[in-house]
Image (tube, rainbow, N blue to C red; front, side, top):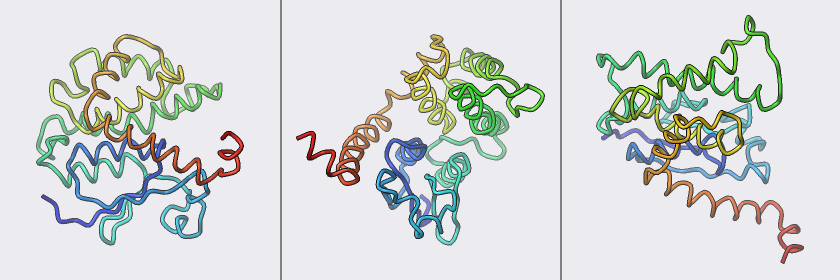
Length: 219
């Protein structure tokens, strides 16, 4: 087991949620720093020293500070190889693992955000080609096996399961069976259920703390 001192900066119902689930899957030993985004915690001078963009997640590993979800995921998954969620450097699956982790950040998420805001970017300019191409490429990979790298789950599945769960909820991706069945299978894992259940409680507490007048009026 790693003896790294990990401090994870997190807010419920955010991109940090997926990292919290991954840390649970890894059995990581870490300190959870919960921030109330609704109350403006992420724009505080203290937090902006951690991430000037005012976003979570962020991870402190001793003297090392890491932002960006995929960077954090790759780092922590490599710290806990015994969890079996990351192919090692000599594993033939390593290249595909890196590809699909970065495909999420570099292609899928930008394509979905542009789709959500009806932003039409020419394929010659868009780093992801087209939204339709991204969806078809992902679907073709998921049709091959139960998990994105084959029969064995990896950290990439935690990201893709979470991503498809949220984007299907908001009709941002096609409700193709290959997406819905995969999302249901991955998010049925105990780690997802534990974190999502706790998030619902935290989210309600933070809403009450950020908007006490609204809560009183509704009572």
